[in-house]
Amino acid sequence: MTAISTSAAVWLITGVSSGFGRSLAEAVLARGDRVVGTVRDAAQISAFEQLSPGGFAHGVLLDVTDAAAVPHAIGQALSRAGKIDVLVNNAGYGLFGALEEVSDAEARQVFDTNFFGTVNTIRAVLPHFRQRGCGHIVNLSSVAGLIGIAGCGFYCASKHAVEGLSESLAQELKPFGVHVTLVEPGGFRTNFAGRSLRWSEAVEPAYAETVGRVRQQMTHYHGTQSGDPAKAAAAIIQAVRADAPPLRLPLGPDAVSVLRNKLASLQENLDTWVEVSSATDFDQ
Image (cartoon, rainbow, N blue to C red; front, top):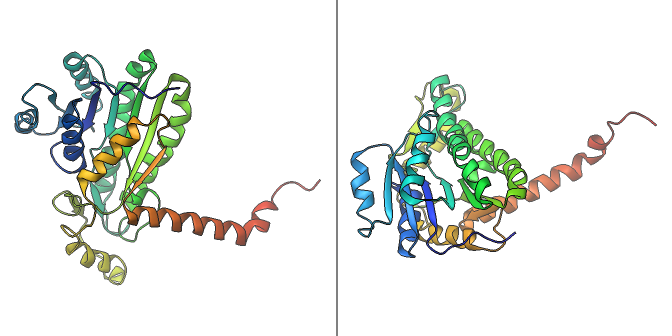
């Protein structure tokens, strides 16, 4: 299998109004590729398309949680650009709060956006990728897809779900020449910890020393993250252009540290409990 052609490639990126989506779109356009970007507000289409007066940027109105609307939006993208080479599932947001504090509606909404929104776009694009025998799916995960974080359970769960889906999908799509990459950023200076972050109502004082401390930390986190979104975009493009694209792309020294610590923790847990874990077969 060879990497997809990167000459005048067409990228479909969800959520290009700000954050990683916007930075990636700008970087892709700067190298001469085309971008079909989705936004949730029609007023944002013109501003996005002005990034490329030559017509290389196309805005499409889409709420990824609207499963019925996604195939139409993908059809629009194909009509305008003629093909899709790379699908980037970037649309999503963070939800913080203790499990006892987050409502069912809040929990379902974050899954509808972060997980099922990703599923919706992949399902709509896959027939096109399979027919062409190439393509690349880039799913934005997070370090929260690798570990659990107090006060962040439902967001972590939604990203863990994206991780599991992507691992399975990579195996399903390998015979069709379609690649899958999970992008796992650490702290980057986007709006994630600002206007994009949602908090449940704090109603349970018993979590003051755990979730309460996370609330306090996050109030000072926005705008101080060390990660540069432009450098993240360059790294994603490099991974997509590679002859052997990675399944996982942790971004940032903090993300690398999280992954190393996770691997060490798993190894330690396995070594400690290996005899118990292995002694569950029927006696011979």
